[in-house]
Image (cartoon, rainbow, N blue to C red; front, side, top):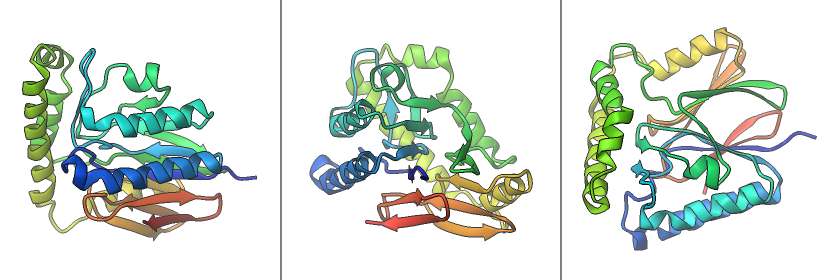
Length: 240
C-alpha cells in the first residue's frame, strides 16, 4: 500500500499579527492532523516562518503552536522533512534534536512510492542572480550568525523582519526575463531521470507535465493556503 506523501511550502507564519494569522495556523494544524491520521509523511520545502533565527534559548513567541504541532507528529512516528528556504536565516538544533525533524540545507533527492522526487525550496537556482546569491552567503555565514546571536532578541528579530522583507521584495521585483528559470531547471532534472520536481519560492502554484515527468510549485499561504499530496499514482495540489 502506498504511503501518502504531503508537501507544503512558503506558509510564512509570522508575517501577519497573531489574530489575523490564527485561522491559517488552524489550517496548518488540520494538515498535521491529516498527515498523522493517514500515517503519511510531511515534506516542508522552506519558509515555514516568514523569518527564522534560532537563538540558543529563545524562539519567536508566535511559533509555539506550529512547533507543538510538528512535535506531536514526530511523537506519533510520522516522518517530517524540512528543506530550509531563503527566509530560514539560522537553524541550530531545535528542529533536529528536540523536535526530531530531518533538516536539509539544499535539497532532497528521494524515491517516494517508486517515483523519483527532487525536492527543494527553489531559491538560488538562477545562475545570473548574483545579488541574491551574495545576500544568501551573508545571511548564512556561520561567523556572522554567531555575532548576530549576541544581539538582544528584540533587536535581532526586528532585523530579521527587515531582512525577510528585503528577500521577499527581491524575489517579487526581480526581472527574470522571458524564461521561467524554475521550469527550465525542472525540465533539466526530469531529463536526468526525476519523475517529479517539487519547489516553492516563486509563490505561484504550478502543476505542469514535462515529457515523462512533472514540475510542481506549491505556491504560498500569503496568497492562498494549499498543500500537495502524492498517493503513488498522481500528485494533486489541494486548496483549503
